[in-house]
Amino acid sequence: MTSFEPHAYQRKAIEFALDNDRCGLFLPMGAGKTVTTLTIIQDLLLLGLIQRVLIIGPVRVIQSTWPDEIQKWDHTRDMTYSVVAGTPKQRRKALEKDADIFLIGKENVCWLIDETSEFNFDMVVIDELSTFKNPRSQRFKALRRVMPRVNRFIGLTGTPAPRGIPDLWSQVYLMDRGKRLGRTLTIFRENYLQPGRRNGYIVYEWNVQPGADRRIYEAIGDICMSLDQKDCAELPPVKYLDWKVRLPKEVMNRYHAFKREKILSIDDEQVMAANAGVLCAQLKQITSGEVYTRENMNGRAEGTKCLHSTKLDALDDLLEAANGNPVIVFYWFQHEKERLLAHLQKDHKARALTTAKDITDWNLGDIEVLLVHPASAGHGLNLQQGGHIAIWYSLPNWNLELYQQANARIYRQGQTQPVTIYRIMAEGTIDEDEARALETKDVTQKALIEALRR
Image (cartoon, rainbow, N blue to C red; front, side):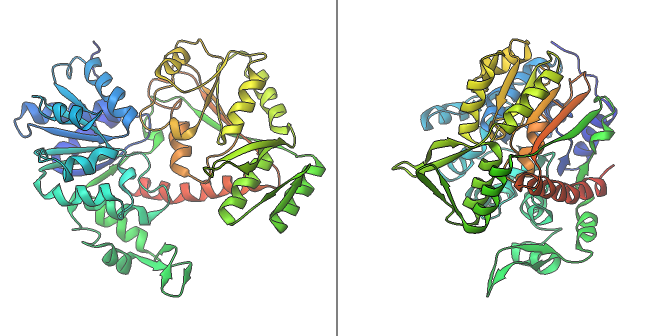
């Protein structure tokens, strides 16, 4: 067992949540949100203010991270918990247990509320509150109905506005039932947003009204607390470095022709872009070096053609510069994983992250290069013990949340080495456009975090 000595920022978060029945803790990724929240729950249980706690989160986190943390710390090990997972029968049996904490995946929230009569919790915690950012999602609508029964609520996230300020309404609603930002999405939009891209009466994008971001920060400042990463002084320094490469002239000619004409001829096959989304994905594949050329009967992409090895060569250079240190490589397309494994396993102990054993082996130092898809490297996954260098082979499809969450797998509490995160980017291509978009979105989120700092 381990004794918990909270850092100053953790003590601040604990006090804030104890003083506010319903709140949002927008803490940096890797800052120990889990043990901080467990300490809050333990204090409330000892005070007799709560009896049954429901914790909602991503499946991997619910099934491993939270149970591991409960058993790790000497002040939480006596708390009882039940993981509500498996078949409906298994989930019902888990709900019948006598426990302090019930852990459930976010995909089972609708089942819990709509198909059982077991929602008798006086406290709800959502790990990664931003997964409830869509007010039209069924899980938000279901949870919204039962929130009046809940006495205490904590929303945890390090990325409260991954796509911008419009993401905040549903998250804050779960805290205060619309008291601060409006009881309906329509009211929120009327007060704080204005239409952006639209087609007649159909609005595709909502932008923030001039000055509305500051009004929002002031409105939610009493129930939301944030910390910037630099407030967590215990973390080592981190560097983000762009590794620019130039694609061969022939490839760049094909790239621009495909961007213009939406048709790419490779040997005896043609690749066509049906819409803008497909075009972006195929342009990313060209910069990667390999493209899908056809679809199977189920509509899944298959069959690839190799165009160049520029990024592979750059990756080799970066691995050599790592001087034997373990490296995580983030990829986006399935064909990238297959190509990278075939290339890397010639000279390295390389493996793709697929099982819990891969995580254990990485943290034990048994893997030189770990290939990780950002969608599988999300919330609560601890990889900081195995290395301090990461390389983005391809960026995560314009998704700021995936980008930040993936980086936080090694840049988090427990990391003792300075962290370096590289991005391999082809000059003059969609790689640079995507990087700029991620930075623009981050500016908005940083403004929110700064406004809510305590």
